[in-house]
Length: 160
Image (cartoon, rainbow, N blue to C red; front, side):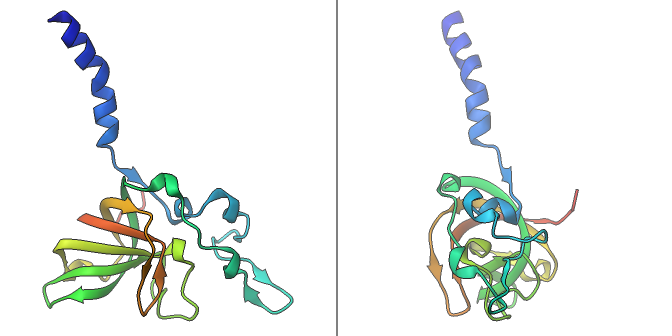
């Protein structure tokens, strides 16, 4: 019995880590190799020869984040739902991100699916979305998302 108790005690930290939720910032979604292409505000550097962002060099995802439980803040762009809940939306790092042309790179857009739906009244401010992150490309008329998030919970945003 003591042997099993010792084994169980040794394994508990592994189980606790598996259930931990990783809080991400938008920069965390960009591979290290692409971060040197950003200015100090996290925006793509401008090519001064033609004054356009170097977005063609950006947009890869971080495969090591696949199937991670995460919490990420962002603005919601509703795609599917009704007057009470939204079941699919784009999560973006700044207000109006997919309305502007060009949209952010794919690694700065997360396609979120909520099976039960998320309350509409919570969508106009910055929110945290908690769920399982997948490194799947999702193409939509508004933009291409580099990540898919199976949403489980919306939380109020706090910048602490």
